[in-house]
Length: 471
Image (tube, rainbow, N blue to C red; front, side, top):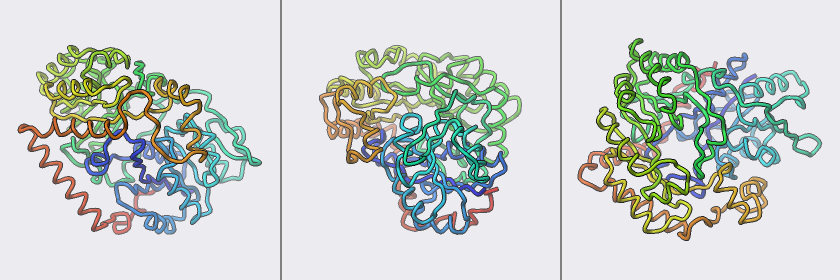
């Protein structure tokens, strides 16, 4: 079968943690989930094409033109945020133009498979990992077989949504390597990245920690084997990729594993710069020094707040002193630092926000990112809000029973507009200092380049043979 996977625009100001400026101008990330799915599809003998409408700045009409040429038998989309976002608009448009099965996957399917599958323009939903379920579904569609007993999918039958939940969590080591060959890796970047081509990677999944605002603690922590991680580094190196951002929630959780990975990277002479995310309470000088030698250049830390009470309330398990010590060790090891902060925590006040901004400015951080608190399904915070509202907001939204609007803020006395103003103030306070002028110039260059690309519409997929690497 011929399968097209579309990375459709997904930005929704009501449910995005980043301010629009950051999301629109300062990064374009590879669609890692679709890259894994593409490899799974090809591994089972099918043809697959990834169309990244975000990175290539494609309109619906332009994607339609590509699909007409490709003649897809099945078309897939990924839904991360459980809302009726632009992804739904794109899927509906594509369904009207091409009468082929539409499959949805992505993070949102773990919580709302029934609601997603109930839409008339969506034929099938892959619940969670596509490793086992998608090949079985494609085989059934290709050979006109029954799908009733396929685990990990949702579909409609006789006017009702049937849900076959997956029986277990997928072994992360069974996944093939992401399909980077089908993408133009030069299109991707982050304001933090210093080298291109740039890509992203995961070496573990899940998390053992239980922060109230984060859903990852609900998933069991699983690590990829050292040899598989190093092999993926090696494949990226041979592909010409010069920088990798490791998206694990806490890359440093198992430091012995990290050391093994670093030693192998050094031994094999893999010359790639990389960054990672870690908790401040996972840091030691010896490990960080080895990481530096293996190509690591920066660590992103989830600091979240400069207020001790908020850190306790959110069950972060860290203190301001631990944060300071971790950053000092990181700088001593010769690594750059970035801090993640959230504005609008439960019980947040103007005074606690000021404390966070002042704390961020005093820390030895090279970069800081300030997020607007967004409540996510699967978190303790959302469960409390559901009880207060008396209904599941995301469920009703996906079913079309309520209009798209921002989730009512009940966890702080601050309103949405005020929180956004504080986020912007935090960015200005941190970056509009003398030592950050070079970063501001870099940001300006990126904005101008994105603006130029937007008005010129230089779409490589239409000009440079999009289909050459689909097999």
